[in-house]
Image (cartoon, rainbow, N blue to C red; front, top):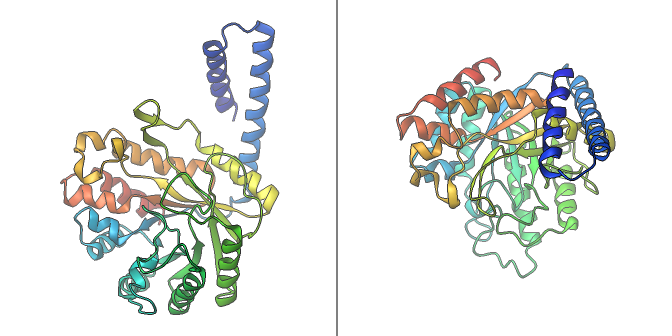
Length: 358
């Protein structure tokens, strides 16, 4: 802790000298002392949270989305098999409404069935996302036949009921994630953010499968703490480290938060809500410039935001957060690099990490 605080003291002092050159020395030192005190308190809360979780094993998992694998030119089933082969044993799966109910009252669960079957055979565990808003663009996955300007919520609840009833007895099903970053308005094609709907969905899931844990993803991934109802069994957070800034700098941006910062967020949440936190999306794939599809970007450009060294650092970052469940975002991408670009570097890092911490 002493070395960490010394480092951030130096960073804060240099920042003050850079952006506040006209301040008096006394005022600058006062601001530095206040920032150092805040950093010490935050780090202490992070350390306390890590201590409360110390008896739990560190578990790595991946989000897996067949449609994304196919968009990269991969066979989705082969991709999941390959992830199982490198000892991935925890998957966050999706139940897109538009895929599983292509017409009103007509259900096709074949896509999700084979994912559950593979997980069950391998003794793997599944976090199943439920609801309208689920991971990957466009975030909200309503079928074309749904009138989103009408009274569509009962149709969603009926769909969710069918999903839960089909999979709740699977030995692979560990827990549910309800919606995904539900209140995040700045990303995705979503229009309904009513708390009443989220609460209704929560009560539905709790009634249909009362013995299973429910996870809800935070909608702000850097600041604050969740407030209001519902209060799930666990919250989750997304962590993106290196992205393309299309709005201001038009270059790659590295978020400066140290790993323990997310332990601090988890600690504040534990103190205020009494619930633990997991990382549901730890960035482990490239973020191309200008929103370009990854498959249309050169390997050299991809390496600017994700290469083997950065992937190893992401696993280290997850460990350093003090959170005990970390799902990485990009398992399909590692396999794409392996089989489509003949670049095994990311795959080898993932294989080594999952062999050590399945």
